[in-house]
Length: 204
Image (cartoon, rainbow, N blue to C red):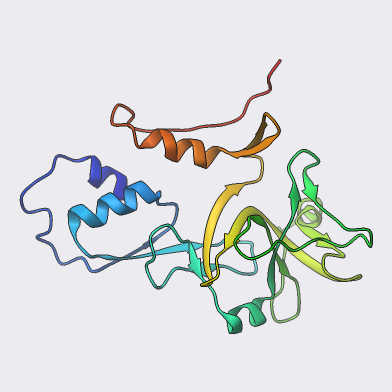
């Protein structure tokens, strides 16, 4: 909806409204910035999560571009981690002990959340196969189980969480991992382009 409002013809009374808060997900940075610049200092809270997931984030601060804000207590409660992921092999990178490798703060990794009694993963009703596909075993220690979000995210030094890409939407080009969302954001700044959708295809 924000994008449609930004694409509407500008009016002198664009800031003449009573909206103070907006909550949602999936807003691109360029739309976020343009919306605030045009319609005023509205607090925008981006949300990250999935209905079947066992953790999520809320950018309650309103920092542009972030999908959430974490802290020491939140991480202790939900016990999430970002681990290295091999896009070519389509699986997490593991060390010589067979365990996943956490990424340093500020680097992008696959988000996984530990499954426990207090933070369970109920799975998909009547679909044992797909339920098992979403569970990673032996992640940080032998015998543990984590929910695989299927998303690549990163956390900065202030605890802000940024969405990078959805697995399956990343492709390799000249030895580098390229996120389709990065290409979309680059193309979207052009005035001649109204809407962008980028996806990888096999190269003969």
